[in-house]
Length: 196
Image (tube, rainbow, N blue to C red):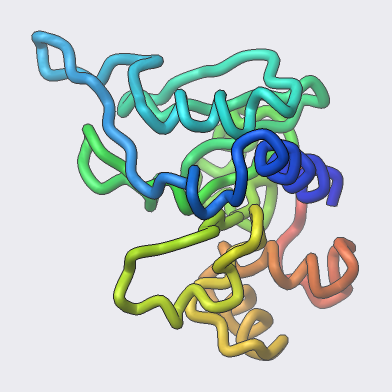
C-alpha cells in the first residue's frame, strides 16, 4: 500500500510538470549493445524515461542491473522496483508496462525462491503501468488504461473471482490485485506465505 501510494503520487507530480501521462508514457525500450554483443548498463531508454518521469519524484538511492541491463531501482526503505522478466522482448528491447515490486532487497527474495517468477506473490509483487496503448486488443487493458501503477489485472473481467482463481491456481502475478481488494491486507486464505 505504501509503494502503491508513493509511486502514484510520483505519477501525479510528473503530470503536473509534463502534462497528461498518456502523452509522455513510452511502452518500449532499447538498450545499447557493446562491441562484444553485451547490453550496456545504464544505456536503456527505459531507465532514462523512469528517471525523468517517475524516479525524480521518489527517493531512488541506487540502481543495479541484471545480465540484460534491466535496471532495478532501490528506495530508501529497502524496497525495490524492476521491470518484470516477462517484459523482455529480446536482450536489447523490452516493454515498460510490467513491473515487479520487491518488499525487501531483491537478492534476498531471489535467493530464497530461486527466480523472479517463483518469488511472485511471496516477496515480489506484480504491477502494470499502461496509461495508453496502441495494442489493437485494448480491451484486455480496460481496467488499467488511463491509470497509474496498478496491481496486475491483465484481461480482467472485473470480478474478484477471476483474480482469486488466478492467484490461487498458478498465476501469482494476480495476487497483488487480490491483496489490494482486501484493503492491502493479506487474505486469510492467501495461497502463499508472504516473506519480507
